[in-house]
Each structure stands twice: as C-alpha cells, then as structure tokens.
Length: 278
Image (cartoon, rainbow, N blue to C red):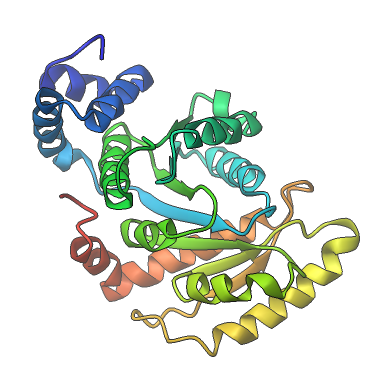
C-alpha cells in the first residue's frame, strides 16, 4: 500500500463521497499487514455512526443467468431513482477469480463508468469466512461514503450464498426458465434462503417459458419452510435485454424492506448477524 492516511483523512474523504478514498479504505481493510489491520479496525469503529442507512441486496444465480447484465439494468434503474449504488463481488475461490470479477465489471458498461456507481471485486484470499468478514466491512465503508443500495454479488454458485444471505437485507436468486433438472438440488438449498426470485431472459420466444416457470417456482416456494419474519417470497420475470420487469424486482425489494422494518425483523436480523458492526 503506497499511501496510508490517518483516520480523520479517511473519514473526511468518505463523508465527501470520494471514490478514490473509498477504494483506498477498502484496500486497507483487505490488507493482511498487522499495522494496516490495526488502522482498519480503528477506521471501522470510527465510521459506525455513518452506517446502517442503506439497503443491502445479495444476488446470486445459476450459470448463464446473466447476472452481470441484470445487475447493470437493476443498478441503472436505481440510479434513475436518484440513488447511489455500490456493487461488491464476493468470491472465496482462487487467485484467478479477481480476473473473472473484473470481467463482470467490464460487462457492466454503463454502471462501471457512472459517477453514482462504484464496483469493487473482493479480495480472493483466505477462507470464506475471512472474505465475508471483509465484505461486511467494505459494505460499512460504502455506507459511510453515502451509497444508498449495496449490491453484494456472489461469483459462481457454491458455498458463499449462505454467508451472503447473512450479511444482506434481501437475498435475490436469479433463475432461468427450463434450466434442466441437474440444477434442482442446488436450487432447493438456495431457494430456502432466497427472499425473492427473478426469472431472467424473459424476452422473445422465451417469454412464455419464463411466465410458466414463474408459476412453477411460486408453487415450489409454498413447500419450503416459512420465512421467520412471515414474509412470503415472490417470483418475478424480467429481461435485461428488453429492460422489462426490472421495476417489479425493485418494487418487490422495497415492499420486503417496508414489511421487515414494520415488524422489527429488519433490525433484528442485522443485529443477530453482526451486519451493523463487528
């Protein structure tokens, strides 16, 4: 790390929404050097009063679902509503994963260059728990920098979904119509964690298939254990290509947050999972 700032400098930069300072702060918390870790801990403690006001959305999806294009369309719609968007990618796999995440970033052509957006790969080292821990801290830093919605994207389909569902407010599962029975096993486990489903690529000749799949998944959700808050997960269909149906996903998330805040579950989940602070 070439430049190390003091805590007041970090705080000042974050409060101004300085993206360069936000990037440096995330690099600081990802560092494994003892002196950086000590400063990072002080920084996280110092910014806590500035955090907690965003909506944290976890997004995962089966291979080929078009996660990057969905996040771009979803993020741009939120920006049109006047919100600032941060996208954090969590990947506990190998050192080559950062390249795949950066590849995702280049596919978000509009979002990656928009002044109201920030996209950041996670550190791809250490255990899953370690990466999740750093992602939680990065989320707090983004909130301190004034971002309204934090999107935490899982890379690939694997063990990270459980961790991401714990550190987010809403966990969205992206699905394809007619993806085949070979995915059913992993679908069920992830579906049990999902607060909502969105069937992507609902355009052209695939539109009717997507609508049929929506009915099938809606029925399947009734057989899963009930949500602890009483929320009933919903299934939406959308197309990032046609830019249709994205607003229904946004409305579903808004409805969920309102429901959870009204019954107190929103705050209880954050406190239970240490999502507000370490």
